[in-house]
Length: 159
Image (cartoon, rainbow, N blue to C red; front, top):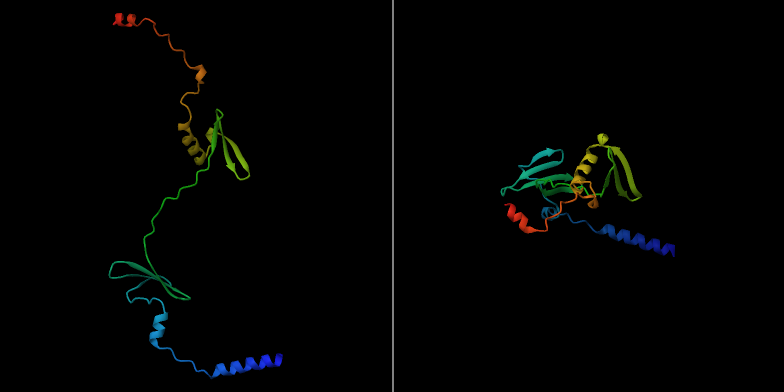
């Protein structure tokens, strides 16, 4: 069985050698190749070229192991990167502040004196201030209001 298989493989290889490869024409080569480097392209760095065409578009060309790569050069738009908001609860302890931030491993708590706060902690405290009530008095300890006159005519008579 092995001898028959080896004989078939050898015969296939011998038949494959008899075919002559047809030379490729220049048209066939051009159809399979990618973009070509224009004559007015300026080298930006080794292997990277910039070219502006007649329509005013700027194209970048880079020499890669697989041929020349071409793409349109568009100015990078600097989009502001928004940091994800991590909720931080702040507790004012008089001369110090306690911060608490949730983490995947449980809440992380730390306490610092107000004079030792870093920039991030000061920003968190400043951001938290508008949320705090203006007065620290409790609603049941509000200042008593003077009693209103039950006789409205006495006010009109004084005017």
